[in-house]
Length: 495
Ligand SMILES: Cc1cc2nc3c(=O)[nH]c(=O)nc-3n(C[C@H](O)[C@H](O)[C@H](O)COP(=O)(O)OP(=O)(O)OC[C@H]3O[C@@H](n4cnc5c(N)ncnc54)[C@H](O)[C@@H]3O)c2cc1C
Image (cartoon, rainbow, N blue to C red; front, side, top):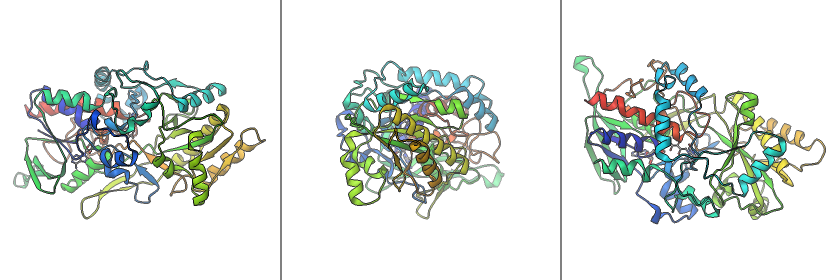
């Protein structure tokens, strides 16, 4: 059994399959870095721990696509927020996909199992200054504010935590590196890093008219040599950009690569009199569902993120070198309210001539309108928290000074009219999903209810690609739950 990818999906499914007695090899194209190796140098960390060193974007350059690429995948670099899939989303997934397991309690049981294993708790969410300001603004407005559930054990929750997007040096973040992958290895799984799976080997059964069967993988190892892995079955868990790319390189088609969701995110930013040091503090500690409660299930939620100089340089509005530099020099006094959008529209992953993924994605009008409402409300939060100036992260600088009559309304109108699509504002995706979605009908999905691709026997998917629609909350726990659930049908198919 070969598992491609070792992140939220790959780590969990590898452990569960190894525990079930299967002979498992995990192929991970990133390297193996652990607590002692996390150097916390921003630029080098992007190179060492992130997919394509964080240079991947949508094909129109409008939205950065940020994902982990290391042993443990996204779970090593992510911000440790651990939401269970909301029941309403599970119900939607059951309806869209025709897969009963989403709403029958089966996925809910897996959610409980993985949350228990990761020690998910709201008890280690001490807010840093960024999150204190978010909470202060929300409370002054009388809006929803809540602590974030996190997968940490013994987290320091102090200034140093802001660097954990480059790996947690304490081992407190319960990534698959320190949980499921350790268990997989203990149960006999072999973990091989620096191996880029290029193609699933599929035996042709055209004579019988039946679908082909996965019999292994062709890969390229560090140093460029070709590697062939023979296996009774293959589980693709390379993330929602790379899993469809692998399947497309292997000759699959149909719905593979379609329905990609990105949770596109943007922000409002504020200038504060007090030092914020937005790169410091617990990764994420507070959130707000205010707009979702008011505007419905596809409205954005608010969270903050740690902002190191490289991220700030990319995100902050650019009018001129001098203006950008002036803003960068004020970094210590800036804060943000992140606007995390649940996209109803979808993009598509294809591969180019050398097999690299290309992501086509355009924000649709409804999502853009909800994003505009989110930014307007985020500006209100920052103003209520005491910002002396609030701005959006459009290419053009749109800002207002709280207290001036009608200032917020004029700013919100200007940002909405400018729009957010097509590179007019900084957008980033930390959550890619849905590009090989699960469903009963091959006309609208790529993978069946038993995690097997509709097209190839013995080829399974167990990662964020499976989501029928966007999760609407940070997706790691949902990915892990689906991977946990996947192990049952996969082991059964091989017995
Ligand atoms: C900076 C950041 C912060 C985030 N914060 C949160 C958060 O706080 N909470 C939350 O719920 N979610 C968060 N996420 C998202 C979450 O981490 C992902 O949704 C989740 O990890 C996706 O799981 P996955 O198994 O689909 O893919 P991943 O975890 O990305 O794992 C895929 C792995 O496959 C490997 N791979 C890819 N292609 C190949 C190939 N061809 N051959 C071999 N290996 C390959 C990759 O290197 C990678 O290690 C964050 C993501 C990022 C990047």
